[in-house]
Length: 547
Ligand code: PEP
Ligand code: MG
Image (cartoon, rainbow, N blue to C red; front, side, top):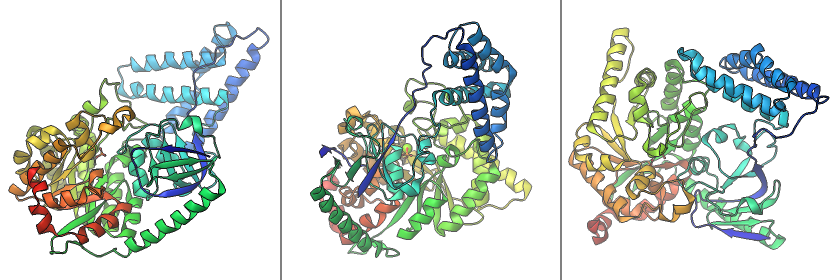
């Protein structure tokens, strides 16, 4: 038995079970030489890989036509010719020949004028990886072998991984890298599953299928527990279940303080399924619909019609207001079908509203879909990463264009649709008084705001001890934003993880926060705290005044 203690909990709860170790395949071409007699076998390996990859792609093509182009490329005679010639002429083994030939085609596509052909470079890179995995005997989906309930253990998990895993079998998550606001932490909270991230020494201590206890609430991981420890934790799991049953009784009860001040408790979601899960807990609205998942879980930029169907279903399912954040990609969030240029500082780079204001056709497809869905319920639009009035004006003028188009086309939408912004940059905090006059609401994104105010990367394990939303600079920024919003007569919410921090609830209530939006599993816990408080006493307390 071995224990590791961690300093921060990413998502509370306790799980016991077997480890599912996520292995990242190394697809570096092996360096071995090939004798004259072995050349035929190497060529056969390539042909076998082409057949396997083609079969896999044909399977994928049933779901989406995007793979049709991949199939053409993998079967292309020029690729076959290049790989086989390299092997025959003794330039390299099959892995080296695949890597080099594909790289050559990638460069060729990248240099082309035609945009469609340039995009094929991304497909070619994908084919290279698929062919190399096939000759190396690696399954391209690291989650394919998941068969029983398990705790996912990985060096790190990308947003795309969480899409591929069989979520119904996941008991919890542990990763060696990542901070408490990383996407795996957010997903874990949405699913109500325990998670610990940034666990130093994790991978050295664990093997696939090992027994493990993940006590995220107690910030402890126990490897190969003995019987006594297992029995102790079985009881703890039982207690947690009982506690959750108590919180569940708060469903539908308002978040009102003892002296009658009501705040909204809302859910953060990534898709319609999450709304259904959150509905089980009861919510006042959806404070953050992260629309980027709709883009990340896709093989192409979702069309206006595809998005319209999702947003309409979202608002009809929620039966309350739904704040949809427009596309927030870039930073740590990539897309499988779009290549981002490599940047020195992606979190300070081309992301979120910056991308939307450049790729206006894509942005308009989303805005038109949102507007049309607003005819079916209270959809509200929220722009992320705003840093200036100018950016907000530009986004609004594109929105106006969309409204005019819909008017001409005779398509219905809510003419009074509410528009808000996320306050997650220091620039937005400082300009909050001016910005507040131009929008219907603010929502504070403390995950990014904390990293930008304190200059501490939210995902960097080495400095995670510095990532702290209780830093007075962050607290003052929050207070400034609430004051600015209220001075302009608009409500101020918070959809960053800080809204679900039990130690912060009193402070945020005292500062006057109107809406607390968080992962569904945390909502009733925070509601229970608020119902115990006296707003007048807290808001008058010197602690809050000093901030
Ligand atoms: C935030 O930054 O606080 C936020 C809610 O957005 P995300 O975590 O998706 O960046
Ligand atoms: Mg953010």
